[in-house]
Image (cartoon, rainbow, N blue to C red; front, side):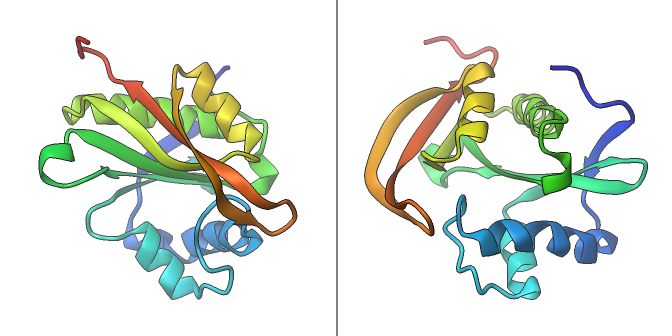
Length: 171
């Protein structure tokens, strides 16, 4: 997939807080992809997304914020060589390659930071758009958590654990 024309992915700044909250809230309140209370406040949404252990990035075109992702160690200590990310894309930008561009950026950033792998801990099985993007990028489903997510429309659905070795890792 091509990178959208004019797309810039940059570190988030405090000046992005209002627009970032507006991006996060519809996703969190829909309750379909994140294990976040749908009644979350804007302040709590920002606190979750921008927690100290996370590096947050913004994807924008012509100053319009169309997505965001964070990168963090998946675990501490002996598990800190594996990273984890969370992604959100504005509904108006679905299908434009924003999520894939953010994933490519995350993989490159994680590799540059010395991570050996990227793991998604809890991909809701009904989130087929994300699963397709991750699998096309080489992620494997390495675990299935039966009925682990209570979807607002579909009831109890599985959550997937997805994994990708990063470049330079010999197995």
